Image (cartoon, rainbow, N blue to C red):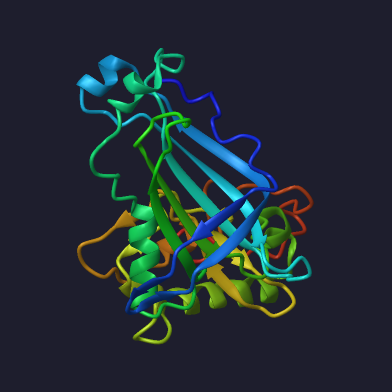
Length: 274
C-alpha cells in the first residue's frame, strides 16, 4: 500500500456541480462550488495482492476549501471532501479498458457521509451543517473509467481549532468557561445533543473543537473516520481529557508559557488537573 502519492492535484479554480437532492429531511438545491485551495490528501493505493486480500478498493480522499461559484463576492465558505477510486498500483499507465475493469459496482458507504446525514436527520446543530453530496462515475479519460467519485460538502463554521497552548495559558475562569461550553455542546438540549447522535470523531483531540472566541460558539468536527455507536453515550469527565481540556495530575503537560509555579492549575481528588 502506497499512501504518499497524490491524485487530486490542480483542482484549484475548477467547479463541482451538485444535483438537487429531495429526500426529506435532505433537501438541497442544485448548486455549483468553486475549489479555492487544497487542504490535504490521503491516498490508499493498493497492490493486486491487497485487492485479493479484500483490502480494497484502491482509493484516495482529499479535502478542499470552496466558495459558491455563482457569486465572486459571496463570503460563504465550505469544505469539500472528494473520495475517488484510483488505479491499482502498477496499472496507472495501462489502457483505459484495463483500468475500467477495476471499477467497483457499489461505492463504499463512507462513515463521514453517514455521520453528516445522521446529524442532519436528528437536527444536531453543534456540528457543521451538511450542504450537499453527489456521487458519479469516472469518465473514460479519468483514472478508473466507471469508478466512483463521491463529493461531500459541509459548511465552514466560524472559529478555529482550539489551541491547547493558548488554552492552558488562560486564567482558570476562562478555561472553565470553555469546558462548560464543551460540556453544553455534548449534552445540552435533549433532542439535539451530540451524545445522542451515535457518532464521534475517531480520534478525539483539540483539533476537533472549533471555537469562535468572538461569539463563544463551539462545534465538534472531524468525522472522516467517524466512529459509530450502537447506543447513545453518557457523559463522563474523561471527555475533557480526550480533548485536552484536563490533564492527569501525575503527568501534566507543561505548555509553553505556563510553568507550574505560575499556572493557576487546580488538582482535584480524582487525579485530574483543571
